[in-house]
Amino acid sequence: MTADTARVPPNPLSDNAFLADFATMSTFGATPAGGVERQAGTTADGENRRWLAAWLAERGFEVRYDRIGNMFGLYELVPGAPYVLAGSHLDSQPRGGRYDGAYGVLAAAHAATRLLDHFRANPGAARYNIAVVNWFNEEGSRFKPSMQGSGVFTGKLALQEALDTTDVDGVSVAEALGALDMLGERDVFTVGDHHTAGGVQVASYAEIHIEQGRELDKAGVPIGIVPSTWGANKYEISVVGAQSHTGATAIADRKDALLGAAKVVVALRELADSYGEDLHTSCGQLTVYPNSPVVVAREVHMHLDLRSPSDQLLDEADARLNRTLAEIEVVADVHIERRFAHTWKGLSMKKSSRRDVWG
Image (tube, rainbow, N blue to C red; front, side, top):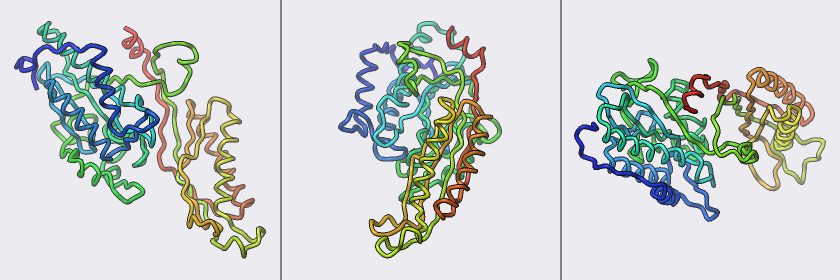
């Protein structure tokens, strides 16, 4: 779309209009507690995406999807110029918060529309084009890993591997996006050499997000700038024992996979406690086989993660975790298989970028 066709009349948006639009968005997948259930590629996620697509199209944006289902609302102000991207994600965790991600997407959409009004009133002032973005599967709840759409966009994740990822019911990312008719055939933007030819260039990206913690709230500070991100190691763990009947098998004879898994969960917390605030650990998902009330578990699958602002500390914690798993194998009489699912290194925002944000 181009600004000089003048097909969209000036449309100043008030804060009340933003709140009204956000209230509408929050109805998609709404939960009784006031949150949302909008996991990536689900019906609720698709409904919210279609609502946003219509909202953007009504205001002159061209809505496009790339090969991993990232959603873009493009507005061309300067033909041939790079795009400034702004946005976040619409998908949620199970029973997630309604502000997480969605606030950033809608804030970007409203801000972009106000900028367009400004540039229409000041012809020739724009140097870049504008795009609103909704990243696919940022949460990583239904499909693993998290930051999937943005990971493919930046070349951190392989496209085909991401498309082939399945949920617990065996539905792949490609199938879920295809069912929503939101899987593009080409890339929209060019970032590095891993994208299809013909994509347009990105000048910069900005995102507004609710605080992922409580520090600003505790300090009474309304807004802050993220100086860096934490690194993360994500693991898939299998604790393997031997299935037997609980009534017939003496405690001393059991190879209880669930006991081994429980010790892993406790060890994770103890590991975090030993580092204070510089290490977060969690076991967010645990699947027991055969999951019968009268059977000693033969196997438990677990998803663990370690997070830290220090890559060095993360490496140290990883080594300690590995030693602890070996100790648990002996104590619980089980076998533990561990593999890295994904590793994200911590990143720091350039000081010049922070100055630009503060203005």
